[in-house]
Image (cartoon, rainbow, N blue to C red; front, side, top):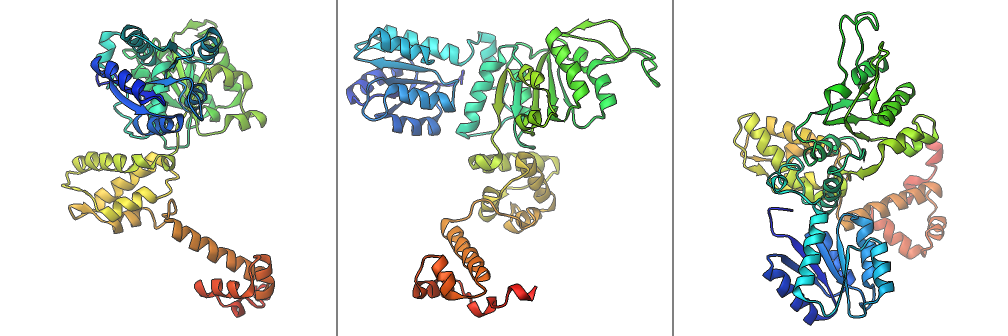
Amino acid sequence: MIGTTKKILTVDDDPDILKLMGMRLQAAGYQVITATNAEEALSQIAISRPSLVITDLRMPGMDGLALFDAIHQSDPALPVIMVTAHGSIPEAVDATQRGVFGFLTKPFDSKSLLQQVEAALRIGTGDLQPHDQDIDNEWRKSIITRSPQMENLLGQAKLMAVSDASVFIQGESGTGKELLARAIHQASPRRDKPFIAINCGAIPEALLESELFGHSKGAFTGALRDHKGLFQTADGGTLFLDEIGDMPLPLQVKLLRALQERAIRPVGSNTSINIDVRVISATHRNLAEEMKAGRFREDLYYRINVVGLEIPPLAARREDISLLANNFLNELATKYRKKLNGFAPEALELLITAPWPGNVRQLQNIVEQTVVLCTTPLIPATLVQKALQENIGGIVPFEVARKNFERDYLIKLLKATNGGVTQAARLAQRNRTEFYKLLQRHQLTPALFKNDNTAH
């Protein structure tokens, strides 16, 4: 990020090249991470999240172009510079056509290297102006993460923020879609104009049209004066349409027309009003399925989904859970005027391994409940367990998972065979002696399953 030392990952199977390149980049003020092959490079990217990758083209195993393809698939916003001692026009053309930022031929001088690096980093950060650099840490301050997945997502969001393209955010409920939309607005040239959010699924259809487009005096019973809609209120700024998948079909037609014409017509008016609004929309629904079912217009989908982002669920980025939980604890302890030092280790372990179907919003609610009820300096595991309603699920140790699977599998077999060990062992493709040992390990008695089907 601007304002901090940029991390650059260099990848080459020649240690002398790595050393030389590292010296040149470090002398220019960059932080350098190295990898000797593509597989190591992918691990480093996941751990360190560099701002730029410089890789050799010819390497044993996965070559530079294959590495680029792997990087581009997971993080299209991460610029890559290709280096080779076997430079040729076809290779350079192939690399640049596939999206590689630049192409250097060995031996290269420091000037050429640094020029390419500076240009790639400018592109990677949206070519920000000096006054933009001052707020670079501000645009995403509400999004707390150390997850490589989220950092990749934020990198893409930063790039698209400088344009006026419509953005579509997909994600489960509670993942923070509005926070991401606000962050995009804050990183955009529209940051000084309004950010207006509306939940399309929370307002009745008749009122939603008026809320979005406004209405004229006398347009309907109760319309005592002209009403400015949210498109007009957000003029010059950003309008966030949350849960757009819940928008009724008739209103989808009117929204599509407004986006195409960049003009709206208030309810009851014959006059169109030009609008200058960047639209960001979001939903937890699968719009591909909604379109197949005829509940969402395909033409509107392609209009709102010029650029798509998908927020991973909290369970897919467990490295963020302790970070978020402690942040919520500090905020809530201040709110409720409580002196709390944190979570007991067992309590934090429960939070980290919980399934979190409600994502970050659920985590915040759980932490708030424990803060309110806590009477000790450390929040104990008992409070967390109660708040989670003893529905932990989530990650369990491998041995526990295997034991649970074996037990459930054996019970299923014994039920299916009415307690017949010979048949059950044959179905499991195990001899009787081994099968009996398994039953003893899990303290299962075959006789208890005889006539099981007739007992119900």
